[in-house]
Length: 107
Image (tube, rainbow, N blue to C red; front, side):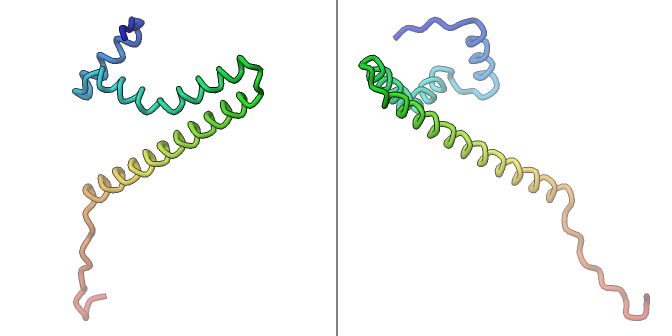
């Protein structure tokens, strides 16, 4: 398969390569592999819609619901990881203070 990329996408993928060291082709293939279930569902729904089968809308609705659910899960994971990183940085910047015992005569 040969693809022609719009300039905006080509620049974004070049920037991605520079920032991550990951080949754009590897990144794109990984993204497309993750999208296979969505692609298959949309294809099935399109075939059903052409035949006048109203279940096509149910398939699309379910596919979109699954995609939204997965996206929300990823977002939650990212928020948790971000929170953990912030806490780790904060802990590293402010090491715990040792409890110093005062002499018994001082108040």
